[in-house]
Image 1 (cartoon, rainbow, N blue to C red):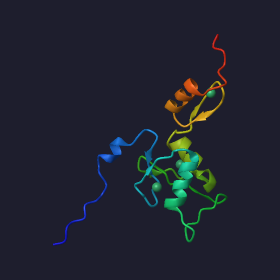
Image 2: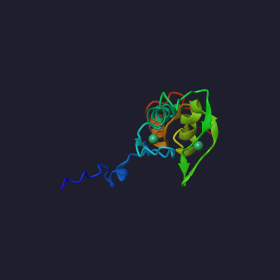
Image 3: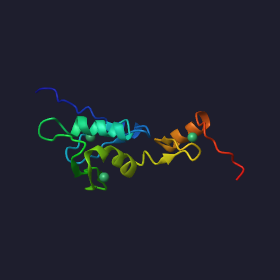
Image 4: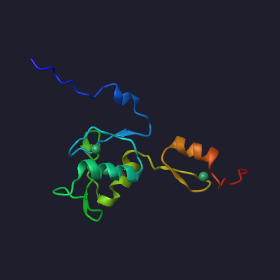
Length: 130
Ligand SMILES: [Zn+2]
Ligand SMILES: [Zn+2]
Ligand SMILES: [Zn+2]
């Protein structure tokens, strides 16, 4: 009897995913991968690499298609340009681009990144005397 090949996916792994990463929920061809870069660029890159190819399922920024990111089991189905998928997923589904520094207008990926920015690198701090 050949040795069974154990699946290499550790169920505990998903629990240790840092807050900046999210599990891909693109439902057409679920890849089960963790998307580590939740910026629009990172998500676009993941979609291009894992869910589109150069032959039948061609990625074209100017082509329109449905968002197939699933939320509570249903694909979102918003119609968008492919080029807008990354930003849409980041802002609508992952809320990863929703933080903007009120002082200098810089967009940060997450709230904790924004706080660090304000503490360490913000240059546009407005006076806080109401
Ligand atoms: Zn994926
Ligand atoms: Zn969507
Ligand atoms: Zn700032």
